[in-house]
Image (cartoon, rainbow over the protein chains, first blue to last red):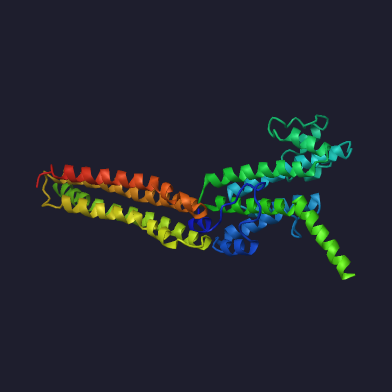
Length: 220
Length: 148
């Protein structure tokens, strides 16, 4: 298993995403640093990023079916145990969230069956559809909170909750091998969350929106 | 049996230096890798990172001195003592070198984003140096008791 002491040491400290004011490293610079990954590790990271990164990307699957298919293919290619585990963790989280959203939207039965290849919980959710937390609250204590945020249409708090769960998971993964591939991919996904959070800053978005309106007005 | 005992004596004689050199190399390699990575991230103070990366090299010096102190005409009487003392001192120095390298890697990673912790973050590496000194000093003391 490769050690990436130089690479990990060249990466900046990532502050907790909710406290960050700006990203400590640009994507361009991060990619330059990631050039020192071994070819196979770099390939696996790219596949995982296209599948479970937080930020919207053109490379991400557009439908459940496509997602399941891509996930199956990805898990055949990805051999790093920690990365596989992280993908499965993300797929579980997304499946549960999809179930919560579908029930909120008034679905009589979940349409997660076809996604059963992506998460082990799809069938379980279907069989416990009437339970508010799909009887999964003991395994995933965040479900009741996520459900309450969904019901309150509080997207920001929901994002914050889910991002925090992933962030903590990534911190544990990085600690398991502080100078290995685990630390590198944990950094990349944490950076992704941080970028996504900064991009969703309501105040900045309002400011930017007003700037755009001004530009349009001045242009006219 | 007698040649084997003499061979073990020679092994013990060179062990402190050989194992300490391996430990220092691994320690310096790991600490140096971290220092090089940190150079990409920080804006200044490069010298201190490279400087501390060289710290595990001191372990080899202890190995040289212990090997010199064990140097004598090897006989059936003194070879077991030389072997035991040499191998155990060598192993201690080997591990100290590697562990010190790891402690320095952690120190560099902590201080690259928080420069003010540089000194305190070196404490674990300094402690490990202390353990290496214990192994070194007591090897010298005990070596004096091995028959010439």
